Length: 148
Image (cartoon, rainbow, N blue to C red):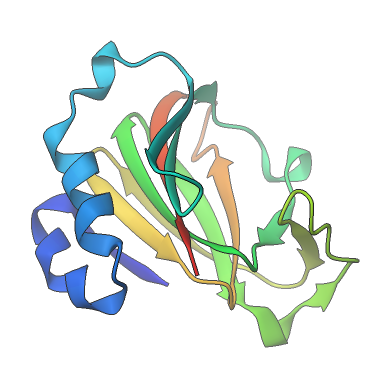
């Protein structure tokens, strides 16, 4: 997991062949004009999910991981809490290859993520995004999915 400000994105270009393109997509677009949905960047190997929702209580969420994609979660507006942890420290449910989703249970750590901050979740990182900090808050977030 990596947590940083979008102004530091260039530091991470060398971690994956598609990270430069992913971060340029995040920095060069005005997402206030985007409707929620899926946006192709480079076929199935790189795409963005624009989300608009209200943060929720931890009891309404679940911890997850993905095997086929790395998540770059970039908060456009609002502030949310994200849970995270290492996959080896959690119990696992059956992996759903169609959804690229595996649910987990275990003890999470937390970080509060606000506008212009991003988190990169790799396949070995458990994550539980979209959590409220105190009260539910409207969040606009872009999740760029980068094929492993």
